Length: 117
Image 1 (cartoon, rainbow, N blue to C red):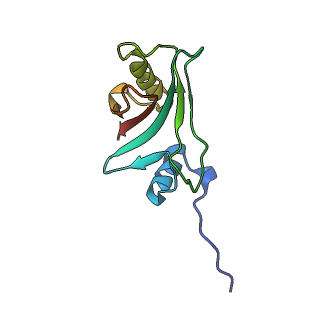
Image 2 (cartoon, rainbow, N blue to C red; image 1 turned 30 degrees about the horizontal axis):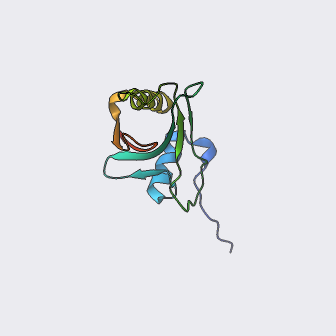
């Protein structure tokens, strides 16, 4: 008898269900999950021509933490760039701005954001 490997059918699942599956098996390097929150790693580019979010490539096995790349028009003066990054990430993930919190990297280009469920 042949044994068949059972895999989730990614074509019929929503994006959130696929990400939830990947969280559970801990295969995505740019997303880490603790009790009720998701942490994402972000590299920022300030003073860009346009605001945009570039997600990292989705890999099943990641050898290091992959970063989202977020480009914003604002300059890093008085926290304006951090506010713009937070707003852009909220629009990208289709959640409210109050659900995204800057955990570390307030004055750095590499930042860690926490997204509350």
